[in-house]
Length: 483
Figure 1 (cartoon, rainbow, N blue to C red):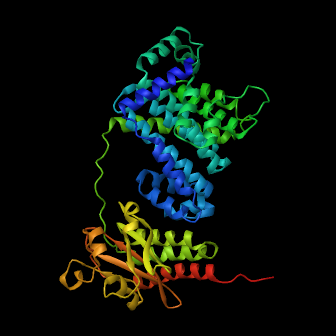
Figure 2: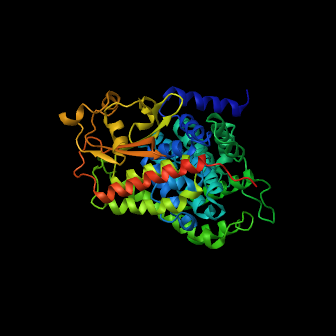
């Protein structure tokens, strides 16, 4: 057995025995699996993103960045952000965030591990800032490669304590020795090789696995010969910059080092300088956060806002502008998420009529615990005098302020009472095609009772949003002209 194989087996065995590193493989496969069905990708991925607050905020910030603002305008929903950025970008952004979450969980309060995390965050920030002009997809690929480089260091710090001490001693004895070469001397494997093995173990995309052996290009006219080499070179550059900042190298020293590679890697020197400033700011922010205890997150308050009409109308205006170019599977989750945002709903899901079974079946939903229970949301299309059927006869959005009241509770179907025992106020928005019920959007503020009935303006705006869904299905059913 080679020294490399021995150390990697030892590392994975210790990880398995201790079991304190969350399974990135599960998270990665979850994200990738949600992208495989093109018809369901927007709805599934939107739900996945919304289930993680930090993830959703990163997605929205990226969609509203200077590079994409002209394409997306003010992007306020994850559904729209995914359409602006593309599902591939979200995939890599999500994997990178999962990797950082894994760093944080594994490190605990260990100072040496926290130092690795800080370096990883700074390296990732530098990568993203200096490569975003190449497009969000390659930029997020490069970020994930950068994080994989840092992950290898963290794994050695956490699980090979004695060996890490020997690596540090070897570098102290020979200042010309790189960290990776010291790892090879002590472990029989470089950090890059450990990172490559981790990427393989966790089934990360092939681009990430193949870039781990790339290094900084030679200081001549040579350029990376493949996308994988470029990704690896960018990751190596960022890792060096983070290490230099951590070692308190001067600004001129860091700048001179980086600018040597801008031509080879097709980087804008001005953007690189801005990225250096941004990375330093991130480092300061990380240190400041360590000194201040993290705030305790409280349950957000849910109730219909006073400016709900204005928020619904703003969403309607944006959706109407983009709707003609969108298929129903992309438009529908955008509408549902927009309604949830405008009315500050805690949960929301869409049920569509399945012609074969003559049942309304939940296709997607957003909010705590919704994704895991969707398959249990279903009812027969045949008329029953409950709230889900009565809304079709009313033919307009309807709000039941308190479904716990005796005068209403008997109208609530058993499946809904079982799945949402805490719900007080229920909003139902019917969607019709040619006068027939096609779908129902159902929303709730959770255990909070909505304080106000729907106003006429809110009803009209909700009806118009439902009409956009109807229109998308009608366009899909219309025969294409023959030429």
